[in-house]
Image (cartoon, rainbow, N blue to C red; front, top):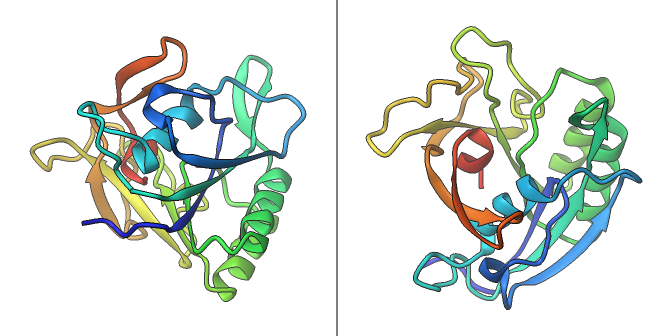
Length: 199
């Protein structure tokens, strides 16, 4: 029942080739010189436009525009606000109407300005609320008013133990034990977190 032939975007890690993404049209662009593992980005992409375990397309005939912004910093994976801003500008230039951002970080003036500019152009942005738990601070870009902030619940509708909470949350979606692509094995795996609720 999902729409077909749509152009969707994501700002995340790199997206690797994977059987769950076979036949999906993907336009990739990297905004960082030091790409981190493609595990997270590939899993998120498969939830958005991949195939379920029975081989059915989740979003038939979609074109995915995948902007890679994750890099390695001191053994950790991080995204720079400048790279995220450039990615959103690129997606806007590609006429992508809906963008998933399974990224979460502190408030940033450049990111705030870029999000406002993208929203003014009509872009719908859906972002992971973050995995800071009940006492965690709001994470961005989800906490900006122009962005749809998504928290995670399990199969019974109970909040994921690590999901961020607060008045900025717009919606909760399944985000616990989500079947998604595993770029390391070439098969599928169960993933949890708001990153998998947002798509």
